[in-house]
Length: 357
Image 1 (spheres, helix red, strand yellow):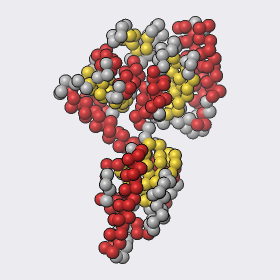
Image 2 (cartoon, one colour):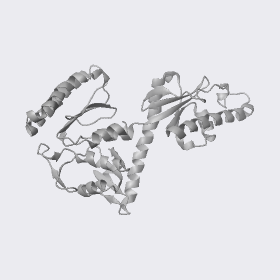
Image 3 (tube, helix red, strand yellow):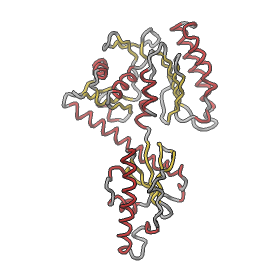
Image 4 (tube, helix red, strand yellow):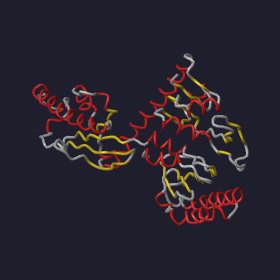
């Protein structure tokens, strides 16, 4: 999820903005069920829009709702689908993370799923450190998207010295050459990291990874390693293994964020009341927002900063889920926002904000 797309959808104000979210299936024949769910949600969206605004003022939007089904090929579905429609916007986003089937009709889009994508879409490198070659691939989540070709990669040096130290007959004789070789590779990876800030998963044996890491100038850019086995020789399979390492690091990051929040409680820097969180986020005080992924709250903004909780989302002026708006306020003002279901969050509440002051 590119920040530009998130910003465009998060900042749009229109009357109305329709957001439709649904879980989807990647495989046939289960993905055929998605067509039925989509029809149901589109009909719900159309009925709500007509009921709340009348048919004539939203005739263009109704036309877009009627046209959505023909734009979606269920054979390309991932874990969820998100549709954003207004008089000026027609956007369809597929996501690799599950969601809650829902229709939102407000003056802004419900961008919570996009915030999750923004946080969890990871661009990283895969260093193929094998005896046959040394290549540097680019990956996004569990897919290879390209290969880096520059003055360093692919490595043209003789890579035969990449044999494990346990298996060579004269390990001492080759170790010095191997260290120098690993040092050259590391410096080449660091040069790419300095330009892109992408971190790296190493594809190698455990022995070579440990030896390589000892030579690393910036060990922190290496997220871990996975072996190139007979079962995963293709780029797609290797990327899926690498993604397990990256996603585990992301989960660790979320756990560390919760720990950071817990420690901030004792310093008086944590807000848990929804209206106060909204005000602090609008004021630019939000440093870290953590929201239970299953928490939603409809509200009506009564003045610039005050919120009235609502249960009827069809009432005029009601925002179906204020957590989306709060999350974008925090992100847009250089804070962090995350949605999670990790157990540690239960001690804090469904929505908490660490403030800068």
